Length: 258
Length: 226
Image (cartoon, rainbow over all chains, first blue to last red):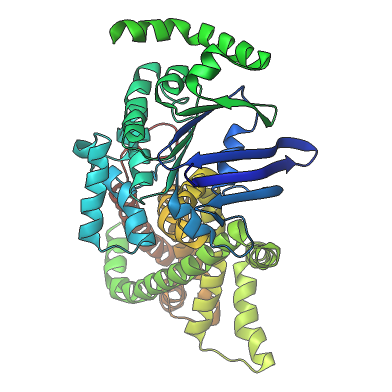
């Protein structure tokens, strides 16, 4: 068993009286793609934000490469350089071109010289298939293209692990595929990824492990086959049944195309 | 009509001399006000309780009292505390401090319009709060602010007229002396009004150019595209 890159121990988040999630224990190994599924409002997005310290937590610990990043005095900005994050609503820097969006972290955070940063940024844009859109502003790109630029922006920092927070839920259906395609390619290249999504097809095909979360705790986790075909808990079966019924038609069409 | 034209031409050099000081005061006051306003708006939006309190006090104090009173306190009041500035410096201070309070409010509005998402995105690639504000939030907020902020230079240009009361020889002061010289206040003030109008017209043209030049495709306030 390899050492996990990312690990949470009893991670807990409470807003006032509301327990968002409690005692979450999660291990992400190098090169692994883990998909978190579950009904809305079960704290999946907040969990991701707590992991890269964008939101404060109320208990427990987070470890990155066996170092506790939730320890007092740990440099948050350093941590976030190593944890890439992709948001539901893209959040590109609206005043910058696609290229500058990817470059800015390299020049302003990593202090890389401009020409080297540009070269690296073009590489990342190429990786998401958008080298030809380098000088477009976010307002001139489709949602799918914006999200791919956002992925390139995160990748440019050479993160240890990438977090995806429902990266396709703000997209028109016909644009979802291009983003999932990029993510599947990353998974194949053994990028370590933690993905919150409702895309069951992606979860089944790409995930090494699926974690089913509900009401602030992990109900069940296992391989896609285990969860989809032999779920241990009734709740898991119920949720998957509901969601595949909802998405079933699309899945079938997708299957027919392939 | 011809008489007025002759009058206008005769005093034009004098008026232009005054106008150049008016312009200088406007540029100085606007620049100082911009720096102050920027700091005050950032303090008000991103500062802790104490810093926010300081910024709010400054803004409310200078927006809540007449410019003329501020000018008199600086010019007539400060010497009582042993601080004496030249007339020009007093005019500059009053205009800059006053304009800063207004500019702070214009900028605050657009800082708030940018929203938390951009801050989160900046932090997510390892930028500090300060860096995100500087490289991400401000470049967007300043662009959004331009249309509303464009009121300030125009308003300030005309506000400079009050400093003739401490005998700074700007356009309004020139008007006073020309009127006294010619016994023709109506002709004088009409002529001076034309000079003010011309300056505002040019200023407006410059501001509109600035708005266009800084525009980014697909990035503007929601609504009708102009």
